[in-house]
Image 1: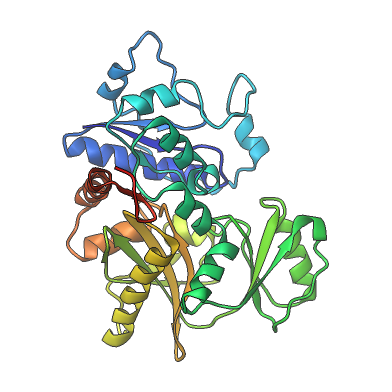
Image 2: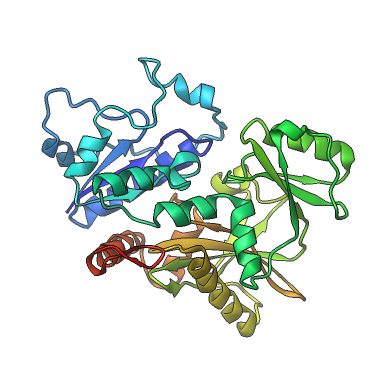
Length: 357
C-alpha cells in the first residue's frame, strides 16, 4: 500500500508529532508498505518527481529524539521560507490523494481537532483515527468532560475560563487544582496550582497557547493510561514519576519516569473496570479505530482524566508500550491501526457510527 504518514503541522506538539511520524514510517516500510513521511505544514518539494515517486523514499530521519522546546505559532510560522501560514504545505493534498490511506501522526492543534479530518473527508482521502466530529469533541476538554459526565463516567469537577475574562479568577473548589489549555496536549501549559497567586500566573501561561483554560479539581491517586485499538483494550500502564509530576519533560525525555505494564499490585477488578470504562469512553465520544484514555485510580474508583484521539507513537509513548506488553510489537500495532480503519471504510462506518458507504 501507498501510505502517507502525516506529521508536524502547526501545533505546540509539533516535535512530538515528528518523532511519532518517523517511527511509524520506518515501521510501515519494514512491513513492506510504500510509506513516506510528509510534514503537513512544510509540505514537500517535488523537485521534478511525480507524486507517485514520492512513495519510493521514506523521507525520514534516524533521529527520534524529541526537542523539549515548546513552539508557539510565531516559532512555527518562521519555519516556512515564503512566510505563508496556511495549514497545508506545498503538494501535501496531491500526495495524500495519491495514497491508499494517510496515517495521521499529528498531535494537538489542527491535527487533532478535526480540521484536517474534515478536509480529507471533503476530498475523499482515507485516514487513520476518528472523524472530524469525534476529534473536535475529544480535543476540547470541556466538551468531552461534559459528554462523559452525561453518560455517568466519573471525571473530576471543573470550570472553564476564557482569555477575555483575564487571569484574576476564583474557583469553586479547594486548592490544589490543575490548570490546562482547554484544547492542548502533552501537558504543554499545564500546571498544578496551590494558591490564588499561582492560579493567576497559571492562567496567564495557558492563555499564551489557548483562548480557553480548564481548571480541574485535583484528584489524588495512582496514574494509569490505557489504549484501545479496534475495540480491544490493552493492559493498562502505570505512570510513576521519579520527582515532580507527569509534565512534558517526564513524558518525552528518558530517565524521568518509570512506566510499568501490566501494573503491579493492581486489583484485577479495578483493572477490568478501567478497561471497560476506556471502551465506554471511546464509544460515548464517538472515537473510532484507536485512542488512549488516561486515568487516576483511588479508593473511590477510576476517574477519567481525558481521552486522546491521536495518541503518541514515539519511543517513550504509552500505547506502544502497552501493546508490546500484550505481545503486539510496534510494526504489528501500526498495521492493526491501518487495517482496522480500512475495514471501517469498507463497512461504511467512518464517523460516529454513521453509515457512509
